[in-house]
Length: 187
Image (cartoon, rainbow, N blue to C red; front, side, top):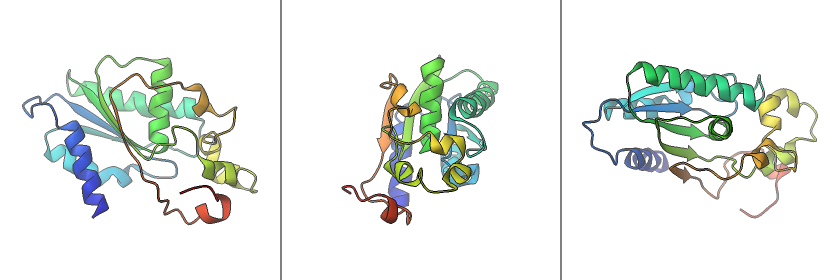
C-alpha cells in the first residue's frame, strides 16, 4: 500500500506540467548498495506517463561521493540531452540525493526541473555514525558510505541549503534491521 502511495506521490509531483511536453526526461539515481533495478518499477511508470527515463547504475560502494556524482549525474545528463532539449528532473534514493546535491554544489544544470528525494540523509545518517566504529564497515559501505555520517567532517555538512525545486519523501520508522543495535535515538 505504501509503495503504491509513494509511486503516485512521485508521479503527481512531476506530472504538474502538461503531458504534451514530450522532451522532459527523468534521471533515476539509486541508493547505497543498490542497483538501478531497484528503481525499475518507477522507470516503467514514468515511461508510461510519457517521460524519457535515464535509470543510472553506478558502483555506490567503490568510489567517493565526488567521483560518483560526476560519473552518475554526467551519464544521466548525457542520456537525457540526447533525447532532445527539455527539462531534466531527478528522482533519487538515499545516496543518490547526496550525489545530486554534491554535483549541484559544483555545477549548474540549466535544464534542471523538479527533484524528488526518497529518504535522503540530508543531515547525515546516525546509522552510519553507529556503524563507523565496527570493523569492516569501511569495506562494506565503501568511501561513499563512510562519508554519510553526521560528524563535523562529513561531506554532507559542507553542501549547504538546496537552491532548486525539491520534494522529499521520508518516514519516521526505520525498517532497517541494523538500526536497533547501533541507534537508540528518537523514532
